[in-house]
Length: 426
Image (cartoon, rainbow, N blue to C red; front, side, top):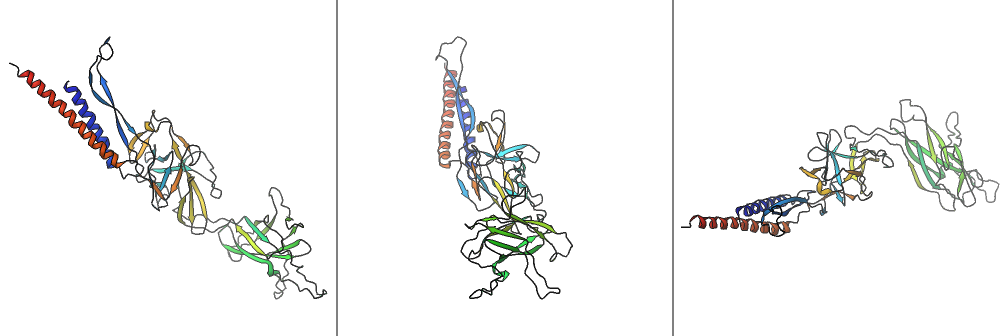
């Protein structure tokens, strides 16, 4: 036995205590992954020496291996907190332009730029999406940015989706005074409803829709009532006609290419209430959901795609990473999709502090994708992934490492006593 073995043991034990202490210090660090010391024996061998006859010369720290097991997920209620449940890393653009990767999803919103950022100011990367459908529009990831500096612009109404049941028991609107008993005329307002449409400046205008039966399975559509008190009197004309078959299913009007289904075009005048003299605009009225059954007049759907300008009021992130922004005008839009990265060898990533890793030749290049796609995990909004440090196990490991350190120190002390005995021989 020599000093070499004891010294190497002391160094290895000290390194092990460093790793354990680092794990314990980060037991409450979001997204932290524990490490462990892995040791290997050192052997001195001469050329031509027979196997097993070489004496060991101590121990070395072969690796500090990171443990990328899943941490517990804790609910926080903060909409910008995001946890990954499964495989993957959030992709970041660091302030110097380089890329890094993290499991810590405690993000913030930069009020000045609208960027979603980390505590270190790194920008979270994601994919651009169609605001209405949420479909990805590019495979190139870039910083996720929300419109915080200015309201989103108004959008002019381009289509209205209408679904109603028109009462099949209704007589013709004109009535029949010669019948016994006489059938009175049906006021046009009997089967009517209203919806707000928006011009290009986001000014709302009520649009009235009235349905008036005009023959078997046939209804005329109006946007206004007659006004006999006006000078001259106003007699409204229908904007179109809806027809049904004997089963109560809509058969007309036929859409003009390239539209599909049953539609009719409306001409909307922005004034009044907009006094700025905007030109008229066209709106497509989609009627695919219309039916004619023997039940009361009942709207089941009446929506339009326009809106006024609006300020950002809230954010929600879906399991698939879709960032949905809510605005003061009642609109919810998809503003992007968080990108995840995976590596062939996660243990080859190099930790650089701030809960971040960077790629190395050992980790391989990142493979980017969306949450829930392929082997990527899904996201949990309003939650964070806890450190995967097992505090109880680390405390036990610390005691074991302490005993190992003391034992190696004892070997050095013993060797020193042996050397003293040799020196003191007479």
